[in-house]
Length: 115
Length: 110
Image 1 (cartoon, rainbow over the protein chains, first blue to last red):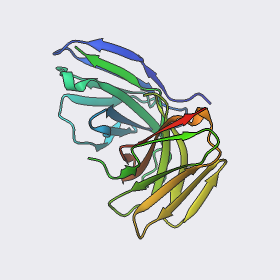
Image 2: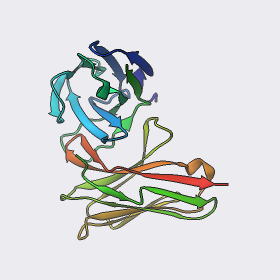
Image 3: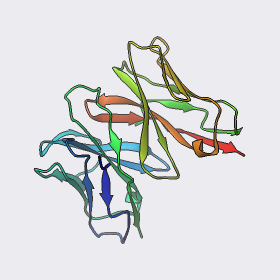
């Protein structure tokens, strides 16, 4: 079974631009979660989608948004990029049970650099 | 905000030695998971231990959980160069929301 895939793997943008990142979950997984990893803040939860609905949200500004499609693929968008948005963005997929027992499987990440 | 703290932040040992990493967390949990990350790449799930378990093994990995002390440890036995990575513990801050510690950076020297 193929793992979680993320595209693109690397991205360079300038301040003020917007960016869209894509994540394809493991086949059969209905939940996709997004995380931001920076040296200063570590790994932080952005949001989670299940059946095309945002089910959980972290403490990030509204510039960070996402969506999920009927095939469970997900995209996240960051508008009006700031230098501090430079990070590794990771997505994870899981079966999506309502309880907290699912294992999340991570993709390789998208490295975003904002200049 | 981070749920847990990992200790030590960095660990360097010789190949063949055992490596022990510790994790402390703040709130009650259903389970605790350990992940590995190689050089800023994706996270690889290593092991999940439930709150009613005290110890769990997987190959060269041994995880313990002490819910009274809100702490867990990961032991890697007979370390190999390929074990060089960062190791994170994670708990759930919601059904599909993982809260990670800052991680332990492990270096295995040949």
